[in-house]
Amino acid sequence: MAARDLQDLVRRRLWELGETVYETSRRARGAVGPEVLERLAHSRGWALISPWMATQLARALDVPENRVRRAAGLPEVADPRTDVPTGPHLRLLHGGASRAGTGEASEA
Image (cartoon, rainbow, N blue to C red):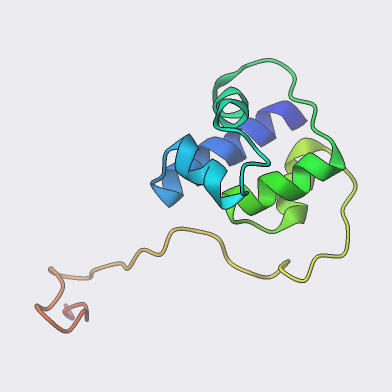
C-alpha cells in the first residue's frame, strides 16, 4: 500500500505545484533526479526509498518530511514543518467572479 501512497503523493504534488519533474528536481538541488520523480509518479511497481531519499523528496515536493515518510511506510521523525499546510492555494468564489483589481470574491 505504501508504494501506491507515495505514487499518489508525488503525482498530486506535481499537479498542485504546476511544475515539471525538472523544475521540481531543481528544488532538491539535484539530489532527486527528474527521472526518479517520473518513475515515482508513474510506475505501478514497488517504490522503496531510503530515509535519506525521503528527506530529499520532501524538499523537492515542498512538503513536510513526515508526509513523505508516511506515504513510503517509513518511521516518522521530529519535523518542525509538521503543521505547514501544503494544499493548493485556491479561493472559492460565491455567486460570481472575483472583483477586478481587489482580489476579493463577490458576495451572493
